[in-house]
Image 1 (cartoon, rainbow, N blue to C red):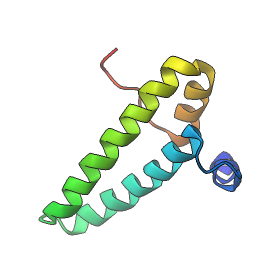
Image 2: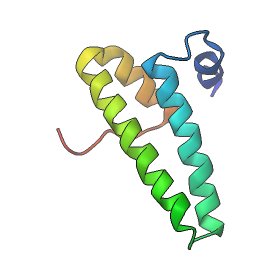
Image 3: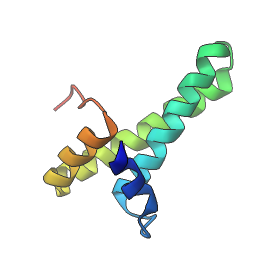
Length: 84
């Protein structure tokens, strides 16, 4: 889990890796919120939007920088998408 700090402390907040890291943190926070507030439909919608943004960034990263994509998936414990 030390590598997560390396990503967050980078100066380049516009990099794809940092954006995926940031979206992953938001997703985890929203998921834990929705476990207690199951009928919070606005948060569910926000979660779906963030998931879509992260998925698009990950597909772009997998096409452009395959090695970086694999490292990021392992660091953040994200499963690869089923559609290929």
